[in-house]
Figure 1 (spheres, rainbow, N blue to C red):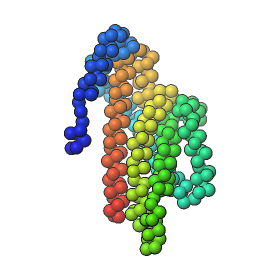
Figure 2 (cartoon, rainbow, N blue to C red):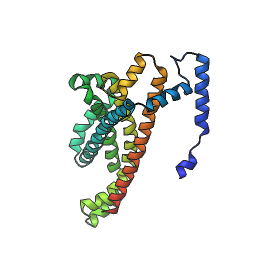
Figure 3 (cartoon, rainbow, N blue to C red):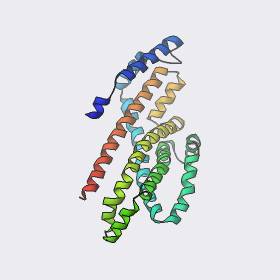
Figure 4 (tube, helix red, strand yellow):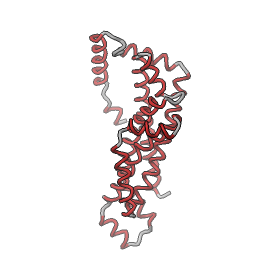
Length: 250
């Protein structure tokens, strides 16, 4: 309820007015479609089955890559915390992944795999370093006093994780989930635009660009924003529930 009360409608209205004014001043629908044209195109898309097929296809690919990166990144972060030699081995690999442009990754991966799996791998590669680094940082910044107390009272590993490490990692992993899912969608859809897998959002974006259908391009972009925001909200809620479950010790 608090977030709903904090929501302000007026900034959105102002930006819509600016958008409409820009479309009127430019006067070319090919360059910038008006909000009304975009809304009309969006309404037309909502009546087609291809919209929901494309959303489902792209969503499954992006979320698959994100979840694999989340699990593997968490495991690697924990292992790197306990084994410094493993960290020394993993860090250069993560640094390379972060430094290579997304477009280069897409082209390189496309040479090795089919377009149908491209967005899964790209989403995975974009999220993996983020999760790994946040998990390691969270564990590394655990208060030393708490660790010493747990050793004095001889707490087992399960209790140490629940009462000490979990609280330390929680905010870092929460941040990684939010940013990671956003990166996964951006990189995953970009991969689809280049790889053009069948029945994907990227394929529809590319078609809109080819046929200079700017209103359709804007409409699909709006759809991506909404789907990404909804997924981020759902993942955030699931993450909070999972942390609550672990804290309860059930």
